[in-house]
Image: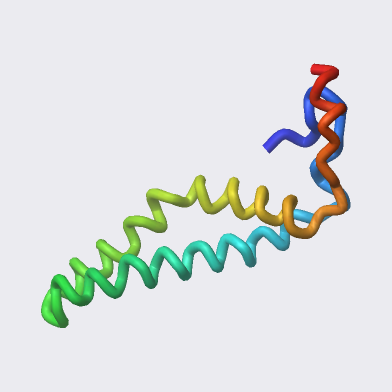
Length: 93
C-alpha cells in the first residue's frame, strides 16, 4: 500500500503500528475461508481422504492471501480511522 495519497498527500498510517490491527481482521477472513472450504470438503470426501480435505481446505487461503492482506487494511481504515471522506479533495487531482 502507498504510504501517502498522491493527490492530497494524506498519510494513511495514522500512527506507528496502526496496521498491526489488520492482522486480526485478516485472521477473521482466514477462519471464514477455512470453515467455508472445510465443511464442504469434509462432506464431499468423507473421513477417508484426509489429505484431500486438507488440500481443499487450505487452497483458498493460499489463493486469497493478497485479498486478505489488502482488504484487512482497507477495512481497518474504514472502520477505525478518524479519516473522513472529503469530496472536494478529489477535485484537485
